[in-house]
Image (cartoon, rainbow, N blue to C red; front, side):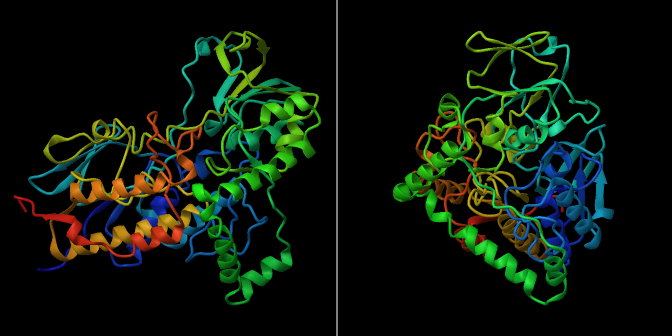
Length: 490
């Protein structure tokens, strides 16, 4: 049978979408279109332009392994730098001309008669493709809680991922609702600008030191000129971070307790007020949630012009917030650092598979997939950063590259044999049963707060082991686990 390159739709132009596009191009599968609802590539690094936005993974490993960057200004790159890196990389590898910017995918349905996916775009346009790669990410849909009275507030309010740069916070009283990753960066960045800062905390996080430093011009020159030096830097950082993987095991409880003691000492050293120390002390095991990194978070909270409220928001009024204990906080602006909807994978795209099944209906009790990539009943649909592939111990870019490679191998089989591949339900169920059994032995099932699991405790967001174990699991495609079908009308 004559080989035919599958026509592929890639949804999203962040790290995942670009990893997939470049993997296809580099292996002769360049018949694809990238659909991106924003005005440039970058994903979350395009959208999250709030003050202080930066990565909490070292830039030498928070970049594509085949496109190492030698010009990072710091060990941890800032949002503008990372966004610029992605724009330049997309240009260099020829992806940009294949991206349709300002284009949102609303629905995708599998046509069993033709074996094609029918994609519907905002505005009603439809297109057909042989395969879809969904690279919409976990943290792409901002979530603002449905708090009573929010529409009554007379001042400026916005989500951290939709920062309103037209609003000048200078000299204003500002409330930051949330104390997670975004808040830990925003609060120190705006504290000197505002008159009074109120931080409303839902739950405390473990916050470690950020071992950051400027990259000297000499080191940048050396990394850019000495063959293999940037690769050595990348490998050393990667191995260092990979060595942390055993810490997620329940068997590592003594090490977890040791780290907790060290972080408690950090709180004691950086905060003077004993009452404030008690408020910021987490009530969950170390490693159960991402450890945030900041050298300025605790000292900023300890300032006289900054107040931490651990009561949570009860309702919003015209002039500010009423907290759950009845206390009133009057402010001029509210910044909602309330996270995203990470368990709603691929939403709001309406996805219809074989026999008219609806993906989000099947996922009502929590999303699951085979290797986080394939879902039974949805042929030739592949995911980047799908269920249970979140990274807490190393760089997500490594996992994305493995997913891109796995997807490319599957598409090569489709190109050679035609038709479609659909993961067998038995293979998907066996994989997820084994996965949840493994996760039961990790710290993620010890009562973690946050978004890594469903309300009934099923862990759906994070991988169960090391990045090397995921690489082994995705090294080859076991096509015996896939049903290979042929379209009736093709």
